[in-house]
Length: 89
Image (cartoon, rainbow, N blue to C red; front, side, top):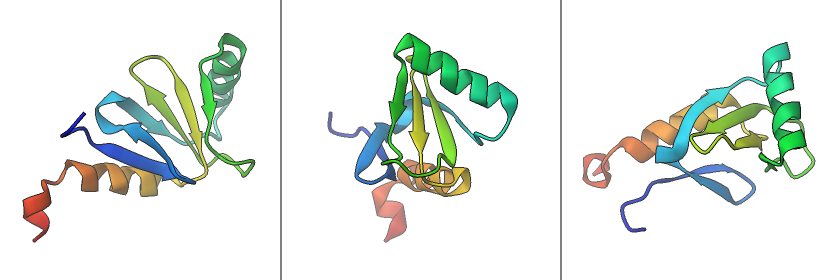
């Protein structure tokens, strides 16, 4: 698994960067339906530790991850993970 980029989605939970296909705001009705459908089908992973859901990550495996972190913050972490390590020097 060397070379695989992990994204911190809060509270010590990580997802593989290459498996994420979307980071969305949970407030809209379609996203609420997506969450409920995923829960009913056993595809939902709640990584909020009981806190308010601030972003939803949609994976290429059709799993749905809930995160306490704002979508913009997850996006910035995603972009940091894409930057080569030697470019930060």
